[in-house]
Length: 158
Image (cartoon, rainbow, N blue to C red; front, side, top):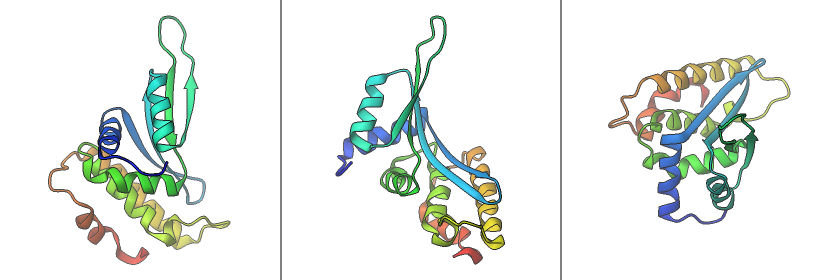
């Protein structure tokens, strides 16, 4: 997972937009999990993603005539941040949630690991959770940029 060609990054962006999912999951008292996932029935696509971008995958065996389902995942915050920074300007459908996720990952106070999460961090993470959910239902992505969201989100958590 060293250098990426423009073609590889464009292909990954297309896969994320079409078959992928971005996750920001709040659980427990303010704990957060972030990930990028792409589901497919093609093991060769999984091999491509693993060899070019790292991560890991899971396999879900399905019965009958259904093909097995493979899900490629990036689940570490540094990996998610690196890949989203590289593809965010190439995304169309999922640009808005990607920008929200990047804003969270770029905020060291909110994205750090804590043994006991402070109340103000819990509040900040909950605010990002609401913003992330809203970004997924509002598909008005035209003209949406990283800079625009940065100025809207910073507030008291930076």
